Length: 325
Image 1 (cartoon, helix red, strand yellow):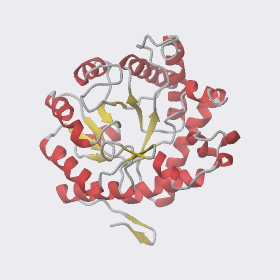
Image 2 (cartoon, one colour):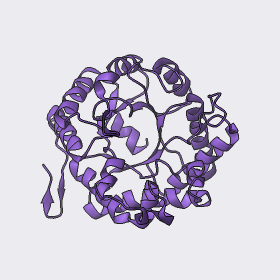
Image 3 (tube, helix red, strand yellow):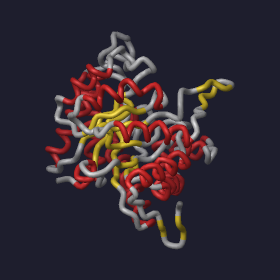
């Protein structure tokens, strides 16, 4: 059995926290990005790999078992917006490489999780702009990305922050197509993002999303982004009651608060840890936790401590001459 899936059968795995807010701590300027394309975070894998590796390393030191690649926007359609679509495979190989290097340099193995965010389109929508694209183009965009992540050596593929079930279905199919082409089988995780009422952007409820995606032979179904853990409670309960797939929960650090036009996430590490502790102690199906927008290394440290206390089998967090507690 795949090592990642084998571990899921025996313990709760810990993912990392947010990437975007950690990048902003470097106060990047326009010329830090490839071709001066401000906000092109995935290009920092090439222009500032040391930043991305430091972020990965900090999460590894904090106790993450699984580290996501900095490839959230590295599908071909998103990269086309920056004139880099023809380099889709390179972007994804590089993203996986940086996680593997970070792990090797610290001497602690982690699972490399290939991050695949939305295409920027909503194929289920009637919107003339967001829905005006063929299903084949979307599937192809994810197909090329999945190949790069597989070639790069990822341990699992994560289709995350899903807002349109049809798009997610196309992404899952593209992953299987890429695995068949490269003769490599990896676990597939699908994360949908729900509003505070338990619905996706186009109104799909969690029950419909789960039913659709769980029938596609995925390995893990999850929730990430959009809300904090409190708002996720009813959906987490329903998902875990299905007693089928392992469930993943990666909330934001609370609901965003608008401060001078900037979204702020104010939920403290202790608060998230307490709520997720309730989840993992109550629901056996909850097998992966982590953090999304607004979560930091401190949030992950608290989650690691909570999991260690729960199992009484602490993860060894010694790295060369430094120890993380």
